[in-house]
Length: 106
Image 1 (cartoon, rainbow, N blue to C red):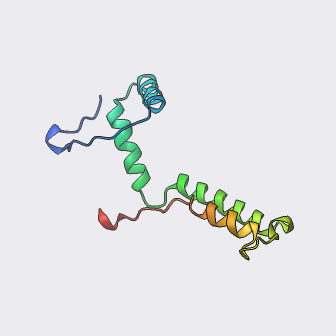
Image 2 (image 1 turned 30 degrees about the vertical axis):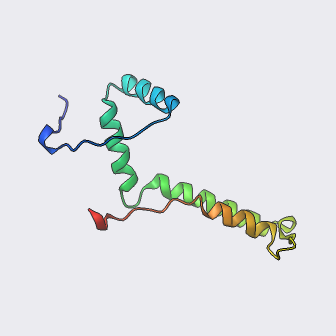
């Protein structure tokens, strides 16, 4: 039997998806026989969870890339600004790290 959330506990929330994301979500929901809203709620909860293995794995991969670039001797070439190619690229990669949410706001 499906577990339903009482409607008096639900708060409306609106978001926009790219058209291809919407199509993929709709197909996924139909395939899994789940409501699209339920999938979105689960995704939000997963993203906000402490110790999220997806986030940890993703960040580990980004950090490994940063270390590989820093260790590459060709990447030590310096530009007139004084910054090395490695510094420029690794600074950019650092912005790709996903900050883990904490349950402080919960």
